[in-house]
Length: 478
Ligand SMILES: Cc1ncc(COP(=O)(O)O)c(C=O)c1O
Image (cartoon, rainbow, N blue to C red; front, side):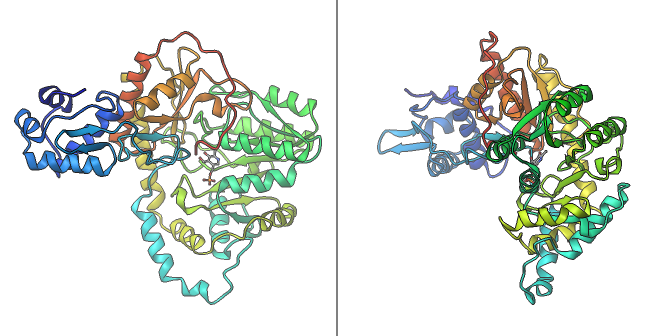
């Protein structure tokens, strides 16, 4: 099987080419391969023929073919030309691929997480200058660097929640913080109550912790319409609850912010049941401009435990989170945490530097705002059958599909080179096939291309409602 020079030239789309031209050409061919528009095993036109059909030189085409060969997308056969590799070697981790596109033209949207802004690199450089402040000591800070705890306490005070630095414990990311809290609170025949729709990895974690401790997970109704407090009250009354886990700030995946009235209602019900609320504030700093401010959950309920993270505000690679808890909880939490690790010291200096940089957060929010507006426009244009509610914050659109076909759509999208996490991953119980999380914290070109590919995948899907099947929770996304 071969593809003619004029056909390929038509698919490539012609000028203008970006510099260097050979790389632009290589990227365009890689996308056609990822899209399935050039099938595996196809012979590409000779350099001379493609040069005649385009405005590119033979040298440029030769360099592009070499690049694609190095990427393992083409295989040269002596005397016969270049052939599309039968099975391109995967270059992305199946767990957390980058937004890309990668060398194979695939765009990874399984993580709602963006690249670091320059502020992060600059903070690392300043932290390295300060390294001698740390290296003179043992380097162990099991409850966290005092400077960082003080800076975070100030942040809480600025949000309307006076905080003593001794109420803070620095962890290796929010997920690690949630694991420490869940393990500390769980117990035999006790229920961990959580939202019916939430962050998949946390749901997975809670199920795991509950199973190991002889308890169980019980959900209460959460939807894009909000948090159903009657359903929460029923869950509290019908179980022996150990804790209630919520994402009140820019809920992942729905993007909703819990308003202060609902926070007060949540706090009152939990207090009546004598149960602590654990509020995951990982996305709290990712407000979109139209979101109304709300007080931290612990301002409504002093017994609440808050979990924060640097991952979404600054960069996932920082691997820093924290727990803010009542004084009495810190010691058991610290004991649980030191069973696993003691945390990294230099990163804590980096975060302290970032918290002291007044420009870092506004720059991130500005980028997020731009991305959110573009994402909503693109979905309205290319996926008009998909409904969504404008998110209050966070990094995703939570799309409602016209049919129960999320898993099938994500499989088809993968064939078009877009990797997504299907709806059931975000459901505490079986269900979720009508929903799809679309993270938009990605380079704008890559995101726009991803939406166009999803639209093509959607058009190709024959769409009888798929049976709603529980796919189980896997550590698939962020
Ligand atoms: C709501 C929520 N909680 C926790 C996490 C995990 O955060 P971290 O990278 O700090 O472990 C994420 C990451 O996507 C998240 O969205």
